[in-house]
Length: 68
Image (cartoon, rainbow, N blue to C red):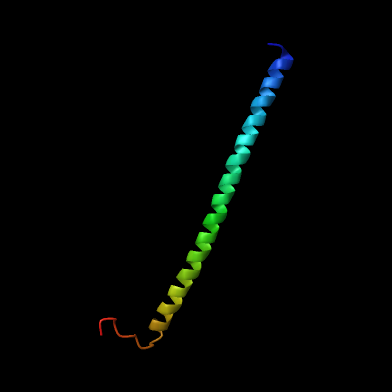
């Protein structure tokens, strides 16, 4: 195999590797964005739960249980 053919083969391999890595990076970025939205949603829900717990801890009368 001549030097030119060998270099062309290496270049083709590298181009394929870069394309594969680019696709993987794009998929990972999509997953990361989805996870960030989920974490923000859960953080908001946890804050709401914390606000409810703070209201109970402040001495507010606790509502009766549902079976009464």
